[in-house]
Length: 363
Image (cartoon, rainbow, N blue to C red; front, side, top):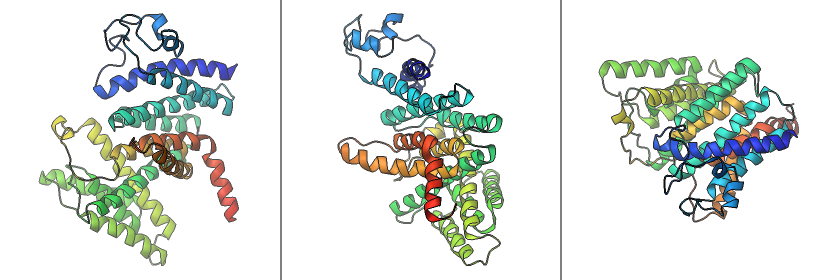
């Protein structure tokens, strides 16, 4: 009964997600005006909005004007229903944990389809999902504990930020990206560089000091990406020889935490406080990975912890390779692949990590 209820509830939530997917990127309210036909504007009645069935009964057309309605609408409803049902089957306890899993699932679906349509991952969903994951961890210890959640969030965001930074450096043939004011990606790399040598607190402090200097100078202070990223890698290498207070694993962990902390804090600044004219500026620089993926990684880390996030990232890369071969004519952003990995890792990530460690004889 729980699985059936979950499918029905999920299909209803999926109907609402269709509204979110369509309206949120356009900056429109998701509650007003009420649902209406996008072609004739006629307000939809209750019979028009029965998930999945309405589309089938009316043969995929508006019953007022006869215009075709995209099959994407019932697809999102059916997908949400199926994943809600699968979650109820895998987590058969009707408790707060199941509600959090359903919320997590809904967020991933909305983010995936918005990214497919617009190549963006809205801050309201990524940061909202991150905050919800931290709340669940702090008050319920679910899906992971509080310490694992916040550290997982920082380290996951730091991982993608640094992978993207190194890839961008290759794409730009060693040239730095456009500096941000008062905070930009160069401060993420600076935090990683200092943290790799001295610890993550010092990395965050160094980035904070650089931002303060920018504000005092009223202009961005140049920080070459090749220098900061190179120092981060060098710090790990030096730590491997045991000549730093940090061991190699502590050096790597510190640079990931510091980079992620600064990346998420900087992203929050740009989401909430940046002037509109700066937010809308076009940037023609080549990039290997959008910063929205970094924020999504931070959200996934808060829900999964870092170890399971690594599983999510591996699944995302594998899914990207497979679907990339199958959909040669359709370029997909990385967000949906991360969402697939994030959903899989929520249920099986920790188990897979333990099995792998056991295989290596480490647990």
